[in-house]
Image (tube, rainbow, N blue to C red; front, side, top):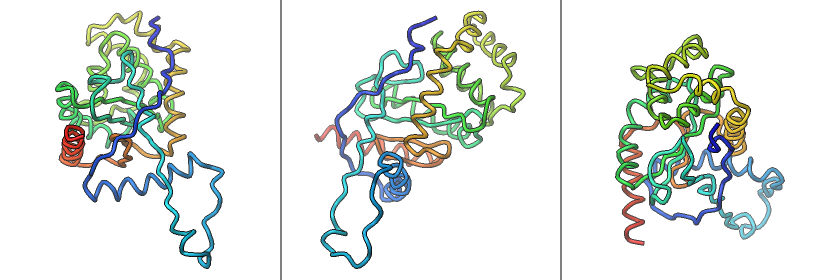
Length: 248
């Protein structure tokens, strides 16, 4: 069993400031409100309307969500260099149709940025749809331990669709592993190991703490984005971030 199956600890990272299209800011603002409530449960109630304008206008600093980027070289769910200037966390579920669509239409373009050294992609499974989703996530990690995470991941979204629950049975997942040339015995052992189960559960719980309630959801350089937005939006945001990083 590889040591990589141990849950990855998050490490504080510096904030990244950059400009983004107005549409992304609007989307992000909606999720940020939820994030702030999740991260600050002891936050006092909003001030009454008759309080002074000065107190009601006091600025509140948004949390630095880039701290949720692991940037761990041993993370088998990741692509791109650990020190890439732009980070993208993807929260997903293997029974989510919009996740299948995003994987088919947008992920290949994101992987090109990763291969060029400009983007770090970190995949997080939150398993909203039950045991079959959890089993698929554990299987994908097991494939990652044999350096086949992305190939296995893509196979779970055939033709831009998610598999049925029956197609995510252990037998079906092992068959997919065998088709990819993996060691089936090791694959089964890793998929069913307590360490892998704990890692997957820890990442899902972390997403819940962040306030992620739907899939796919994203953190792009710490900026929340909700839903399978068009590929061009991600491309424009990444290129804007790269331009800003180069000028900085």
